[in-house]
Length: 233
Ligand code: SAH
Image (cartoon, rainbow, N blue to C red):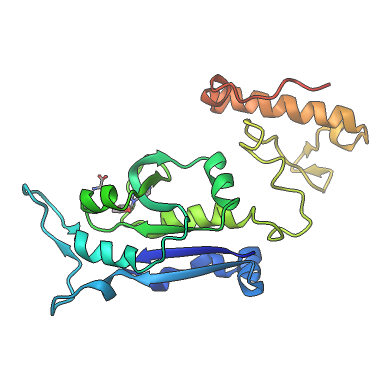
């Protein structure tokens, strides 16, 4: 069964964007997932086809009109897929939420623009606000592509036989250990000896220690969240 992403946007040409390339692009061609971009402006009914208006109460910028956006959302059958709104006010996206979304049948994503979206659509259509980080983008499209990238790469079959995906940063609650490949010496620096020792238990233990060290240095919050696996071996 294929995963279906429906994206509501004022810039449908931005989709599938980079997800039309590489592994995600091949999976799209195979039909492992589908991406439908819906033009919000098609649901504007006035003669100028306007989609935004000035903020009630005054202030800078414009707000996406609730009636137009609600009609666009309602044009997509409510088939149980989660309905998200990309928003810097949302809950920060995590690999856990990405996995939940990937386990479902698809997702409906609203991309905001301007100052954002009329609150009554968020409430009335029960949109789940999702943020991709504490910074402000000019629109929800790159945020939606980021979320979809994270979801699509873990759909069954998309990464082929590559085992990556299981060991990565966050999957075990830790940042990933460093990687090396040949040549044995690069600019005077050697590959850590344990990695070429052939001792798989020692390699696993080293990788875990490095992951722990890196997480402690850079993201102690991940350890405090109680996510770290016990030290193995
Ligand atoms: N005035 C808003 C920002 C609007 S940015 C505020 O201060 O909260 C315009 C649109 O870009 C938003 O509606 C949202 O869809 C998208 N966007 C911006 N930053 C984002 C982020 N960090 N995560 C997800 N979406 C974001």
